[in-house]
Length: 290
Image (cartoon, rainbow, N blue to C red; front, side, top):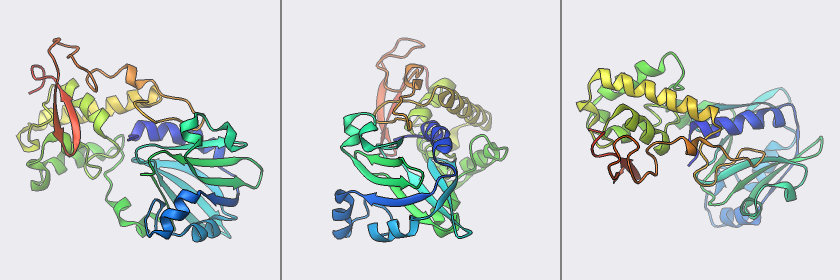
């Protein structure tokens, strides 16, 4: 699943390609239409394909930003602001093209689900291989309360204090530290890949209970998370599976990962171990992490 650095990479390439353009029409795939007819919520949330297209026609994209792992399309129509919230799920991707045949890679071309036809010509295309992503049109963040519970951005001044205070609460003190730092209410945008890296770099076992880690080590862990996320943003993200930016380009952070997916520890050479935490596989060194 794309984490903060991957979503940031999409936004940095998507914003200049989308900002200032007006949506002429929307086309939704037969797959999504069929899903909606079966009362399923595939990709389009709280809206039928007809409602979604009708509401977005004539809207102008005024900006594209990121909040945690979400892409925010800031929209305006008749002087009224709206917000299109996009989550990439496991395999979502955006493309700015003149026609759908330009979408990079056949696996994405075969799974195009929403096409935004722009008034100035060209398309913004949302493809999603596994259909776990979402598009949600709202007026403001408060219209979808879960957005309001996200932790501060990890580079904000308040982020460290928020992280430390959350770690002290009974809700998180008894949880494995890996599960705690993957919770978007504690740290925004840190998922399995970068949690694995930060824990290795600070020598903390992923299964160690959060409440049994000193404040000093927790501070060190938070700053390492910041460093890993910043490094990944600079590298264009990690293309472990289906992540691509709007030009179909992969990131190269996966080449710099020291623990995620490794069979041997790069520090001591020991065979790495695996355990399941929060439903995700955690890789760690039994000698270097405690």
